[in-house]
Amino acid sequence: MPEFTFEIENGIGTLTLTRPEVLNALTLEMYADIRDLLHDLQGQEEVKVLVWTGEGRAFCSGGDVHKIIGELLEADMRAHLEFTRMTGAVVRNMRKLEKPIIAAVNGMAAGAGAVIALAADLRVVATSAKFAFLFTKVGLAGSDMGAAYLLPRVVGAGRAAELLLLGDEIDAATAERIGLANWVVADEQLLPKARSLAQRLAEGPGLALGMTKRMLENEQNMDLISALEAEAQAQAQMMMGDDHRRFYEAFQRKGRPESKGR
Image (cartoon, rainbow, N blue to C red; front, side):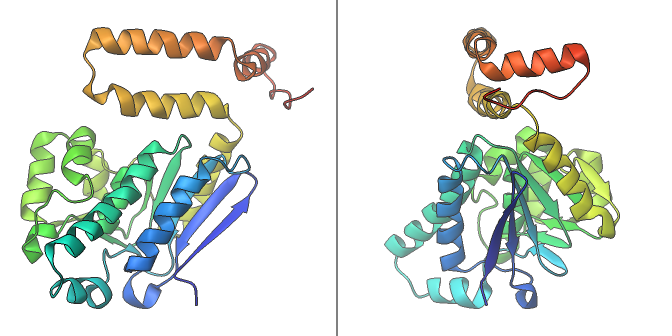
């Protein structure tokens, strides 16, 4: 049985972790395969947006305790560093992908699973969902896979320190209150809501959405003057593009944009 599936329909790519018997825990092979998939998606024009979810009662419980953690206890420093760099590459490729990523979080998102949800652009969360950045509970730094970089930018430095230092579990309502969840919906509405958002994005101006994601990423470490100049150049480029003409004309007539090539 595959450890995850990837399907494309109407411009939406759906990545589903399929190890429900172990709460969709990640193996070494899964990390590597998903890292490569995310890299390849940049060049796949038929995929406009990615939805990431899990099968069963969990989004992702993190790294597989038996297939990864147990083996690494006997490994040397080089093997540990190769592993941590590989897991970080998953998040790197998520953030570099110039297409929106929606995490549809069902059930538990723990450890690496919590960071993967965090690294998505948007998070739709089921009422039964829980998050736990539990690294310190097993004697590891809370700063894993970019968590210490990304989390303060989403929930603020003080709340990020609380979540990463203590590693405590939070529920969906708390995640929404602190800004970690964009939407909280009933469990049965999770995928319909995520797919509705994905379809809206898939039908939108792909170049503009990609540029917006790129600028959100690039400007985090810029001063205001640098950001203003970067945005001026990016927007001037977008104004010259076909997407701007098509979507502006559609906005003016209150209709849908013409298909490319017409």
